[in-house]
Length: 234
Image 1 (tube, helix red, strand yellow):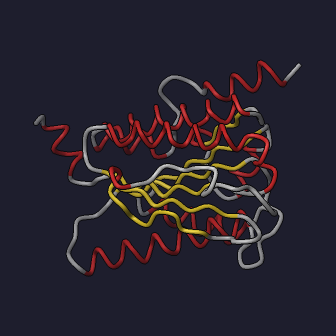
Image 2: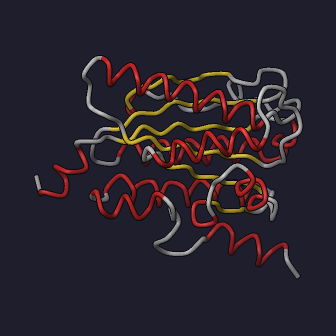
Image 3: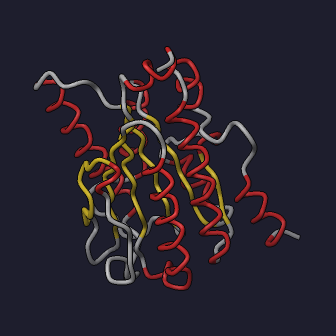
């Protein structure tokens, strides 16, 4: 084992994945399922230990936990039974609840003397916030900024140009936000991009990881965004 591998293994990555299940995702549901499953398979095959928490949300169930802190090999794929788009988009409430739950987990691990995890929060959505009751954009931004100061990484993948407005509103930087085309091809390409950059992040040493925290999509451009621009912008 190299020195770099030893360093990265000290803080295994825990991917907290927040998936929009609102009704507007229905048209690209098969591609979301396929894209997520491809991302999961590749992360399971990646060397090194990692965990995932998978949560999906809509106005009918604003925080459904499908996977809670499982080692990656034990995370189950999505299917048409587990991913059924419906309802509105309580995005801020879902993000806020996820951050609170992840914070409680981190505190419990610290109290039990367990090693710290590298926390990555990845949000995948196709629409704007429209149903939250507990949190607003300002409160989510404060939460995210506080957690970034503690070393957390936030990634925002959103369909269409509004991804930057939505991500920026809650404190996710431009370098860690990527828009994708609002169709099946764009949905799959966004997962492919996330897979590539997540693999780089997990393989990186401490200094490289630190740089990627604020510029997650740094290394080879934003392929999903370039595809959206090519096909949807005049």
